[in-house]
Structures are given as structure tokens and as C-alpha cells.
Length: 376
Image (cartoon, rainbow, N blue to C red; front, side):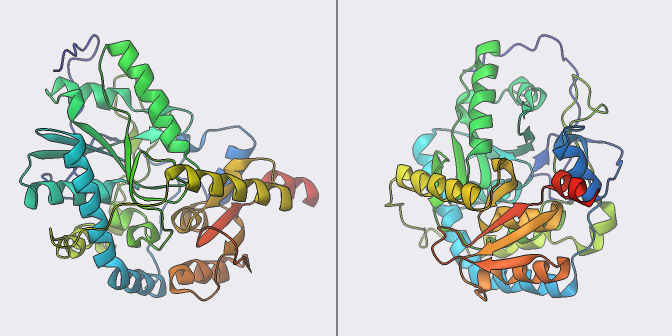
């Protein structure tokens, strides 16, 4: 039952669809004016503590033809596997919820999977499902105005299902649990804080389809497979009654593959092909991940764990959106890391091979403050 009574906000902002069909996804995000920073400038401001990463954004450029070809190659190789894993998550959702489902994907890595799960639940399981994508930001929490909006629309908190694409160190898992606990206490609600993901390489999510680290196709791209929406922004353009912000990358519209990507995976989904249940205990994956992170911090003399991004998906983010320092791959030349090795060549980043690594790849963010101090 939903006993939510909004105290301050009576007129909520309107959702936006990005480049998705409205029945597939509505973003509870506010378009804001873009004050683009270079990736290097953004990294410096983050590391010196002048600005939080959520206060800044860089202008995404169109993917190169070579890189796009790698995306097509990975999609061809893994679309059936991904479809089976989406169906596994759909099964898990049906076993943990009754009645209508309210899918809440965490923008934007979780957004395509929210769209896919919405289609799986409605088309293959005959359930009523609605999908919204909302913001959650490390150290800032989940967008409480977005949660207010959903409750004000009559969605029962017991139907909420939080979706992300992948997780490794568990930063977003922890942020979600803390944020929802605070929200429930303040609003006398009982929203479940479970996180459902496709790939849980660190064993930190509540429900996952796989622990495998592989090149999930959507992780290779940015907004062009995520509705042309940027990652979420929380700066002075976002008021207390606003949704968290975003930038719509209209300049990339001719390169947009968001709907096409969804259709490709949807075509592979079937009740006859569902990924098997996980057999390895989640705690085992957690121990393996913690041990690896400790080793890397010691061996590479890294004092800030936030500079270490394990997993192919997170390493891809570093190579595209941060200032990378080093790329570690489990097996050089493996198709799953071809796009990463390509980016490393383009950015002149050293690549080392580590066969005992429990992930396909791991990237280190450069300590730009130390580099600047050395240069001075």
C-alpha cells in the first residue's frame, strides 16, 4: 500500500523520453545547460576536491568507425548471451514481486537493461510493467524527488525494482541501500533496496544473472546506446524540487543506436533460453574482488581506491570518460578487450597483461595532481 503524502512538491517536472519510445523508458531527469569541461580539466577538479564529479560533464564525441565496428562485433558475439541473462533477471523479478512491476533503472548504465526487462516482463511473462530511469550519484545519493514523483503517481513501493547494468566494488550498491534507508525512514515507506544487475563481478549486488566479466555490448558506448542522455548531473542548476540534471546530446542523433540495440536483444529473448542460476556463492566473489583490489593498491602504490576500476565495463568508462593511467588485461588480444586495447593505442596508455586477474580488465585513473606536482 502507498501511504505517501508529498509535503512540499505538488507540481512535479515532466519526464523525458530521450530517444527511446515513451512506453519503453521515461527519464526522471531535468535537461540542464551544458557547461562542458575537458576530460583533463574535469579530472583535475575532481582530484583536488574543487568540484564533485556530478557537477561537471564533458562533451561526448561521435565514436570512430573502427570503434563502432568493434561494438557491432561484440553485439553479434554476445547478443544471445545477454538476452538469456535479461530473461534470467526477469524470472528472478517475477519470483520476488507480485502484481505490477515498477522498474527503476539507475541512469544511465542501467537504462538499456531497464528497457529490456520491461519488454521481457510484458512480452514474455504477461505482466504489467512500467520503466523509469532515475539518478543515483556516489556520495550524493538517489534522487529523492524522482522517488516522490513515482509514489505520487500511485506506484506502490513494494513494486519497485532497481536495475543496473553491472557492479564490481559495490559503491552504487552501498549508495542505494543507504539512500533508500534514509528515504524510507523520512517518508514512512517500505521501498525494497535490492539491486538487480546483469553482471556482478564483485559479488556485491542482491540479484545477478552472471558473475562473468565480459564485453557487455552497451558498455562499449556512451549516450548513443542510452537514449542520447548524459550521465546525471547535480549542480546549481538543479533546485530542491527538480529531478537531477542531464544533458541531451542532440549532436549525436545521427549516430544513435539506442532503439536499434534494444531491438537486437529483444529479438533474441525467449522463454526457451534463460541463463542458468548462479552456482558460486556471492561471498566468494566478494573475497576474490577485495583480495585483488588490495594487491593492486599495494603493488601499484595507489592510496585512493576510487582510482581503481575493475571489470571490462568500468575500464571502458575510464578509457572514454576519465584520464587513464594504466590498462591491465587478463589476456591481451582477447576479443572482449579489443576495444580497450584499441583505445589504449589511441590514448598512448600502457597495457600490461595479468593472467591471474579475476576480471577481463582493470583500469587505473591517473593521479593528475601528482603528475602536475612532478612537472612543476
